[in-house]
Length: 245
Image (cartoon, rainbow, N blue to C red):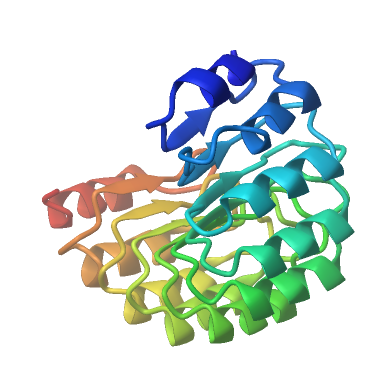
């Protein structure tokens, strides 16, 4: 399919072949396409793609590309991702969640190169720590959507940094981050009044954190996920009453 798109569909600007079984052959076709094709969004989540075809694809569309998603692409290496960031500093949306080879160095390069990021997904990355998030937020001030789901190095300090450097954040997912507690939620509630979506599932969030959200974030908050958190019905009802959306 991808070779046909590259040859015949000259006005396509977005390609999503997530979990389709697309391989290097198809990705390479998107870089060997006609000169008129200018992709803005490439989503390859769960595909068996390797370094060389991805780098050629990004090189070919680097002037127009603003979204890249490679969630779960297990064969990609840190050096490849670093080259992608260097070639495409205008990226606004990036998903490198569950790419197991991501290391601290590649995160540092990402932070220094991608100043225009609006949304970022780092699900399940061992390399993510409070310190790396702190640096990220200092450099990428336009971030509005962050996903740190199942990042074991994320604690309340990360939520404090978010409230300090990105107070206008709209969406945050820290589900599965066991070290996140009511102390971190307090920082969010007091500092991020425009928060719309928040996933605290399987964290240490309790009644105090939920009560703070109800008291301080009710104007914009419309989605809160609290699966496997120990919250009383009273505080759930309080959150529902305060958050009219």
